[in-house]
Image (cartoon, rainbow, N blue to C red):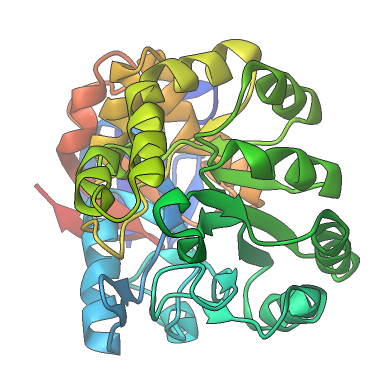
Length: 364
């Protein structure tokens, strides 16, 4: 099959062309001898990336493969053709065998301690000192990533319960070093201010949420070149979570409200400091799949330029993850829009066509 892509084909920040073709599932900029069987006109972008997504997870824990398939299809039809799983209790390795589902980079299970994360979500270790061994085990099960829960509410403190770190700094450093020794990268869930210095000292590769970052932390994060996944759709829920827990954990509720109130300013501060801000929906758990356009719109609402958000949701993060985008001979994983989302982020809401591995898998 030959497919003609025509209009504006975006390659990266500095390069775009007027047309490209798909031949036998691969992209080419050389006109083929065969006539195309279909033509797609518009703005063609490398497949979108949801860099914080949980295929296989719902509010109560792991889901069956049929439900996980529907989650993956919702992501795909939104234009997301590459997912970095940010922790899932379900074994979703079977997704790799499905040519009609997004490419998936798994991080194994969230690593936490008993009663220090959401029930049925994470792998609860017997003691903090078990973390380096568990990191190696999850690295072997995943696709180059491991996910740590760096902080969570400590309910044993009663009314003074608040976000506190789970891991001693030396254990955290040993765990990240163990992952790096086998070629894996580590990301961490963190809401609290108190966790960030130890994570950065350990050489963490990515930060999820990072809502507790101070100006000093932002400078450190920027200097280290560590990306932050803002997950603004998730942070938008903090007010409701605070209201639910206020009676038992008033200190925790106050903290969440403070983090919620400054969420947009914090993201602007990250961006202005030069921190790479990644686009991740935190789909799974309590959030539905297929909402990459909503997350992108939130980042623009926070003050980031649409052009920067689109780049982060596509070619830049593909390069960071080591997955090719638009290039000669690369797999044809692209999304076609009627308007340029770099100028109007709302265009992401309505893909005209989604092409995965050279096949049109969704059309408006």
